[in-house]
Image (cartoon, rainbow, N blue to C red; front, side, top):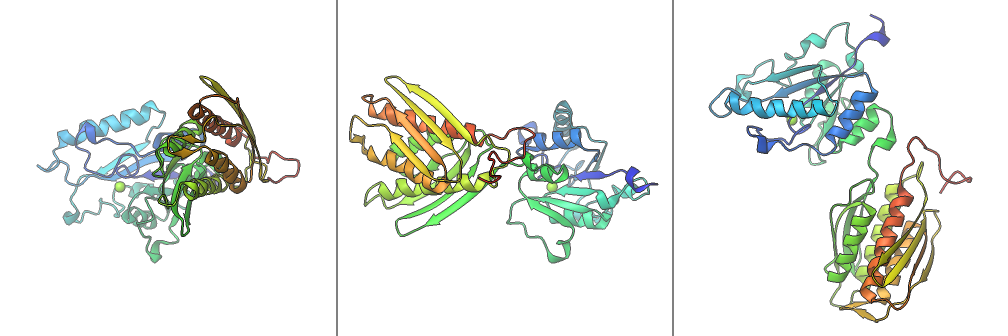
Length: 378
Ligand SMILES: [Mg+2]
């Protein structure tokens, strides 16, 4: 058969890949892996890979895993996938126990030996699995593998050439298979340790606004919650600062780490809006934010606080936060607020406007991979 007509296959594991790795013997135990629907839908829609499930379900039919406990949840999983346009061309499940050493059981190829024919091109086919045994299956089939698991799983040297990618994110796999970087979420982690602060922050700027950055300063944590919610960045992090001195280092270094994480997540900034602005009202005040991820730091702040302290938080640190962010994110940041309003409102409106402006500026323009500058670089 002509090479270009031979079919390509994705052999997909179930537990640890589609749903969480556990014995799924009740409906409550069906927990889907993040982004599995988004990634598999794009792959189904935009490629001609056949989708073939290959799963070991240890001991189904024994008292430890009765068939009736297996089948309901299993059918529910396939029904849900089908409802999202993800249809498997074939499903192979092995019920044996490891000690039976069945040739059907992964990494044995017994379940999928029929694909070793002229009709299929194993050199262009992949196994997607969460275990090293899945990667062994890939090697045994003469195809390659995506290991969907955290960095704590080590790939042995003899499988290094089989594993094309080791990632904990389905969207990375979709981006690779479809050769479309825009499918992958833009993420960054920043660790920053000085004598004054110890910070770990992770962000996903294509997130949905979940997670928290905890600094140990109540008011500031509240402002960070506003940033996460209104930017719709997913964020997690902890900041351990020298709060026994004052709040200055903690606020400044959080801003530097966040700015650095945003800059890192933006990468080469291809296809982004670049500019964003927002006006946010809050009772007696109104705040404006405008941001340009220009690659150049500039900061203009036209706001005043009625009170020098908001609870135990010095108002002047708000200005300092934004200045530090702009320096590290290499952006132009303009902020203003109506004077004379309640200081808590002024601060909150500024943080919300900043977050919403940022959300607009980092947004990707569908189908555009250009840099939003006539210089060709930002
Ligand atoms: Mg698995």
